[in-house]
Length: 274
Image 1 (cartoon, rainbow, N blue to C red):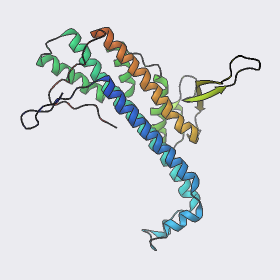
Image 2: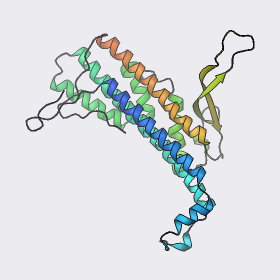
Image 3: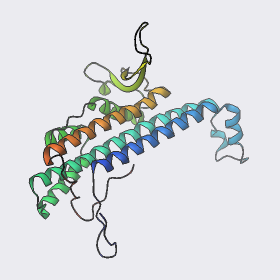
Image 4: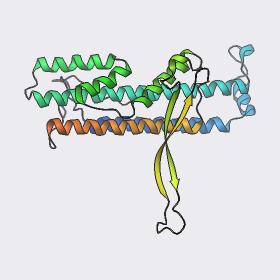
């Protein structure tokens, strides 16, 4: 739906399809960029690094120039921090968008007239949700809409991991551990299972399986290349589960053929494209 921009504000429709396209597309771009950066990091060597560093014949503070080993370690840590930060930002933004959609669906399902008062209530609830800590977002999705996030622990671990990287120089502390005394990262990987000898099946079976990496107090938080890429797959799996739950809530509330509800006001914007 669109309107004349010179006469009245443009109205955008928020839908689950739009949310899923935006965030899954952003996630793929993040994955591609990470793969590119990791590939580039493996190709560079000390000679190439020094060649580029000295192209301008002068440095800002030459006595502070880092050698190849130092900058390689720094770059590695930066890629890890940026990867986890980007994934967490996308996750929280996606949850915010899904909460708004569910609030609009619930409002339309109980009040067909969508009065100014109910629109204001939706806007206030959404503002409160956006400001809420990550743990509270999970609780509110369950309490308000019955949406259970199957991978809540995995997402919480990513958030804790970012805190470890940003505030404690990648050193895991006791306060970061779960009840089992670990900080556990979960990854989605592909496993190929060859058919047994004599089986009628000719093609191997492809499965997505869960793997994990556990850290204890005092450990340095670092992930391999495949684990960093695997985190993106973990977030993708979380998105798909969340979208499925939101769709089920919408169908239950509005019925199979219900129209997508409008935003709370004519000035509302569509979900951001991270």
